[in-house]
Image (cartoon, rainbow, N blue to C red; front, top):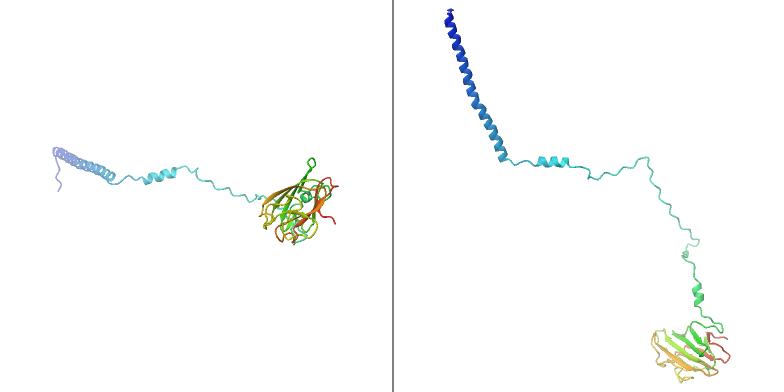
Length: 266
């Protein structure tokens, strides 16, 4: 049953309603304010606790710096050749000329015959060989007598002859180039060859140790003067060597103007 209100009652009713609404709003605002502050404090506390308990994450920073480093230092890949480029052709290698005789190699240098010709001793009369020197002013003959394996200057059994001018002063430089001991002595050109050293045909015309011989590279000098003429033999005085062919001729020729040495003429 609806009971109509009076105007005064109606005004009181509205006033009370507004007061109630206002009080309700104030109470809600008062209740909301503490919750906002607590929320802020909680967020701040959370941030402080996170920063204090967890270390700073530097991995992300390092990665970002590494990614930001310049890439210019990295070597550039080699440029690929274009399909249209053609590689340079190598220079052709000259092929050796074929040898007609497969069993013989072609000579690398031509044979030098000039040395052989110049080293060959002159055998013509009046020429001086590589072993012979002559001083016409003093009439001195110097002869190099080389003892080899049972030979003198490569000659045996009278195969060479040393020809001297009359009354020449003779110097014979003897050198033994053989491993066997050898000596030298001037003996007469007549009669058989003795087995060993004997009295020389010319005074002082013999080497030291004429019987036992000088060792390899041993040397001695014979100095003597020859007469106006005569025929002699230069032989090795070691027993048995002269008989084995180790001797050559030595002749004094009054007609000779200079000494000579070479193969014996028939």
